Image (tube, rainbow, N blue to C red):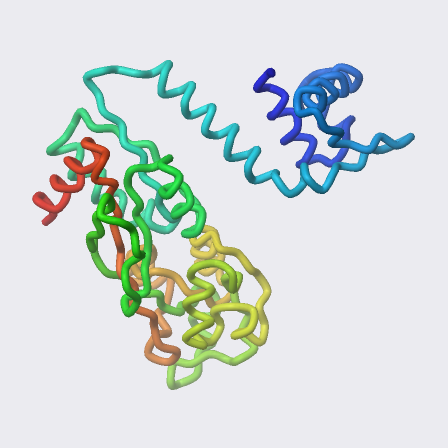
Length: 297
């Protein structure tokens, strides 16, 4: 078995075309086709239906695209761990939501540099569900995530310690021209373009459950952009593409300098808890967690 076969299959899944996939892999189409056949022989099943001018991918292959992508990433990380291993330096993996990389994680990194300079980090960023899965699989020893302030912590067993790192709020805000299109009471027109979260995303689920206007497709009369990527939402809001909901920790500078305007007085906000889950079986992670709490200002 050649690990490159999995990379070939992943590119084929992305391109849905043998010729384009071969070009991306920088090999000829016949050579690429032979590698895919080798992969099928190793698997012991046929994964493609080969037609005259196209191939049809099997449902089993399509259904496991995320698993293939995850496996490739894990192998790459293992290769990196082995090739860069230094016994005097510990590295811990943190699974964290994208939004927290720009808000809470810099504080964690600053404390670590000052009090544990030999400790390094590997970040696994994703949406909340992906981060929890990474943590549950044991691919990360620390989970940094948002939680609804009114919700109970996730029910892990005694090997996992739950701590509160801080609090935050999701607030509705506008930038660009919409800063000047507000009514005298601070509200905006119901048809104002909205940059919304998918309702299956964590923020989308919370906001839809609280029926927060302009937050998700079902809560916005004019949802023009839909994404779970908070950093992208922030840039679109600053550039005046629509009203958006974002954590205050991500946008406090822009609120202070006037690039964004907080509309929570009119449309409310949603309180969040920033949670740390630490695997107590990982000595480096446990030591780091204790240091962070002891040295927080």
